[in-house]
Amino acid sequence: MKRILVGIKRVVDYNVRIRVKADGSGVITDGVKMSINPFDEIALEEALRIRERGAAEEVVVVTVGPADCQQQLRTALAMGADRALHVLADGVIEPLVTARVLLKLVEREQPLLVILGKQAIDDDNGQTGQLLAALWQRPQATYASKVELHDGAARVTREVDAGLETLDVDMPAVITTDLRLNEPRYVKLPDIMKAKKKPLDTLTLSAMGVEPRVQLKPVSFQAPANRKKGVMVKDAAELVAALKQRGLL
Amino acid sequence: MTARILIVAEHDGAKLNPSTAKCVTCARAIDVADISVAVCAVDAAAVAAQAAQLAGVNHVLRVENPANEHALAAVLAPQIAALAAPYSHVFGPSTTFGKDLMARISGLLDAPQVSDIMAVESATRFQRPIYAGNAILTVEVAAGAKVVGTVRTASFQAAPDGGSAPIEKASLDVAIPQHTRFVSVSAGRSDRPDLQTAARVISGGRALGSAEGFKILYALADKLGAAVGASRAAVDAGYAPNEMQVGQTGKIIAPQLYVAIGISGAIQHLTGIKDARTIVAINKDGEAPIFEVADIGLVGDLFQIIPEIERLL
Ligand SMILES: Cc1cc2nc3c(=O)[nH]c(=O)nc-3n(C[C@@H](O)[C@H](O)[C@H](O)COP(=O)(O)OP(=O)(O)OC[C@H]3O[C@@H](n4cnc5c(N)ncnc54)[C@H](O)[C@@H]3O)c2cc1C
Ligand SMILES: Cc1cc2nc3c(=O)[nH]c(=O)nc-3n(C[C@H](O)[C@H](O)[C@H](O)COP(=O)(O)OP(=O)(O)OC[C@H]3O[C@@H](n4cnc5c(N)ncnc54)[C@H](O)[C@@H]3O)c2cc1C
Image 1 (tube, rainbow over the protein chains, first blue to last red):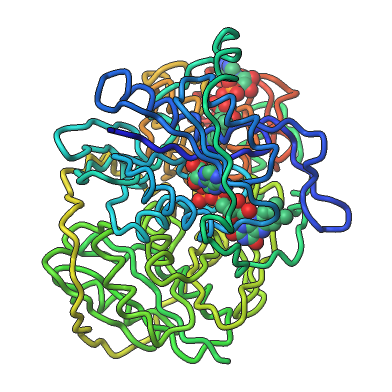
Image 2 (cartoon, each protein chain N blue to C red):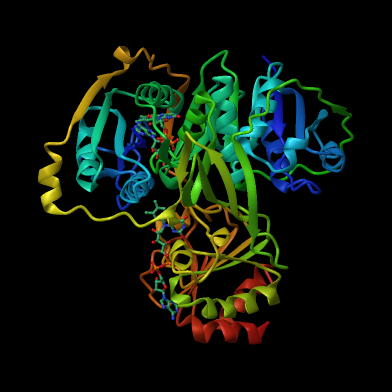
């Protein structure tokens, strides 16, 4: 079956104002709104569109994380994914561990494409897609803003520092999404009800034979340094004068 | 343990990108016995000569292969991985080139990657921003692990010239994958300074209203010798091309002067400019969050203010 695997990470919603705990042990996540990583919504939307065009038959969403992540998987099912895989893992899961889990699932599911976000907006690592592609020894097309499938290959336009780069990658391949790839659809209420009946399998790291190795130990978390309070000027002339005074013009 | 650090050079075939000199400065912040720069190219001579001049560089390696014409991560990663054995650290810049490539190297080496290094505390302890820069994480890499790192270029000055490192050819025997092929690149060509290295940057937001509206920014920028940036809203709306986006998911920059015009100051935008020396904000809404970080703020209509500033220059 032509299948697409999509990574779904549960993250603090992008609208939440992040606060570091007073003791520096982490970021306050109790009671804050959690959502699907915005790049992963885009990944799922792209997979659904590919399926709707007939170029794939099944979209499987996967998350690695604690029990709460099922909420985001249910949302993904309501958006239109066919089934979900939840790999239960508590505590810090480093990108290399996530990538190893994804590799195991790839071996099991044999997807045509794996679509992930280019970065998760909590840890901002931006590694998982490339790691998976390396471990799998398959192509990667990161920062995608356009994806077209031709027989056996994907033509991907990538947002790079210089502008837009286009690559052809043989499938199977890993694609990571950038913001302008698409606009994810909204979930409709009846779909939320239907999603409750869609299959969601739970797996464990140990059953998959992946060790939750910790090689990047968090030592402390700090709030960023605040900038000094600025001054207000009343018109263009004052602005130009202030810039001259600071030697900036 | 004294460190031996391999840096992957970023270049366009002819010129070394300044991001490489910033990686050298980051590497020099570590107690380091050797800094080597690898230049992957078809013919690496010209770029290798530039890398050899950077103060602090001990060796430059020419990694030459006809397949290296375009910097494809899938092609370059196995070559760098094959060079990595004697090194304790492998660094590259946190640009789209480096972010794409280094994590693939991390996977091939099974070595953990520290993304976006903004400060060095020791050979194994680094600071990096998380949550769009709303928190700074100090992270310790496990003893014995090789460290792959991407260097947040806005956090480090470029290493000066003044070195004269020996240049060697690396002879590698690695299989180059054929599964990834370069098709094209369309670069928005402009005579303006490069956004990532410009001393002055003028950025526009949704308020500019159209690609036409952005022209008043270009006129001001040209008068100031500045690069032009944009908010995501402006890029999404098609007023400016994607390579101009500044922020968490665009470019992270550290100019001497940053002028935000008609930009509200969303956290995702601010994370891209927090290392700017002086931030100027022009916005008609006095409550806009951009004023919380601005060193100089001016409340008013940009369509009146910009032409006035231009006249005064
Ligand atoms: C207290 C605390 C401390 C931490 N300290 C560290 C640390 O020091 N170093 C460190 O590297 N990490 C740390 N982590 C983060 C770790 O748990 C991350 O989940 C992991 O590093 C993945 O990184 P990322 O999400 O930034 O991946 P990215 O590479 O940015 O993610 C890219 C894409 O990969 C996919 N993906 C990523 N994770 C998952 C997942 N779990 N399930 C499904 N798809 C996924 C998604 O599609 C995502 O868009 C810490 C977490 C906590 C809570
Ligand atoms: C995952 C994610 C990643 C993101 N990454 C980025 C990123 O990298 N970079 C980025 O910029 N954004 C990013 N964003 C988007 C960000 O949240 C904001 O939506 C965006 O920055 C808003 O752009 P803006 O300030 O141009 O528009 P708006 O927020 O609409 O602000 C326009 C401003 O113009 C002012 N204005 C209007 N008319 C005038 C006038 N005539 N004269 C003067 N002022 C005027 C208004 O008062 C207002 O403050 C991201 C969002 C998400 C969810």
